[in-house]
Length: 126
Ligand code: HEC
Image (tube, rainbow, N blue to C red):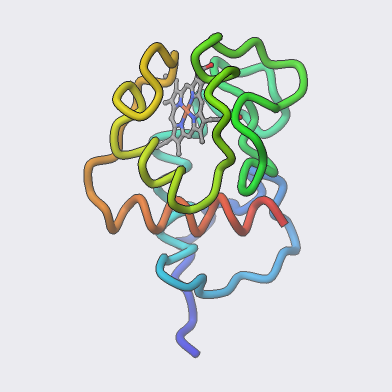
């Protein structure tokens, strides 16, 4: 098994992953996903809530719009989606296209990067 690359001090604790097994997730690189999350997502998606976006801890396989204490758009709350890898991929590729009216505006156009991010979100949801 290949050792995942987790750059330097980049904390997997962003989503409360401390102590979790760091492993190569199928189809995505957890270390790269963690770095991308830190770069492009963490400033809004604070692990403890209270950010501009909902906490994404536990988001994998959860219903859309279900983080406690976050006031979602009606569009996302009423989307009926469950965050499987397929739905996350579609959403991250183009949030406004996947869920018209959502307040999430950040798209990730590179499919490999989406896979890495999804690997990270999945690991952070265990
Ligand atoms: C500028 C702030 C901001 C950034 C940066 C951001 N998001 Fe979001 N995100 C939001 C907001 C706000 C929502 C809630 C949208 C709604 O209610 O329609 C959201 C919702 C989501 C959801 C759905 C959560 C749920 O509980 O249903 C996912 C998944 C998500 N974002 C992933 C990401 C990822 C991955 C990144 C980094 C590539 C990212 N976001 C970057 C603001 C942001």
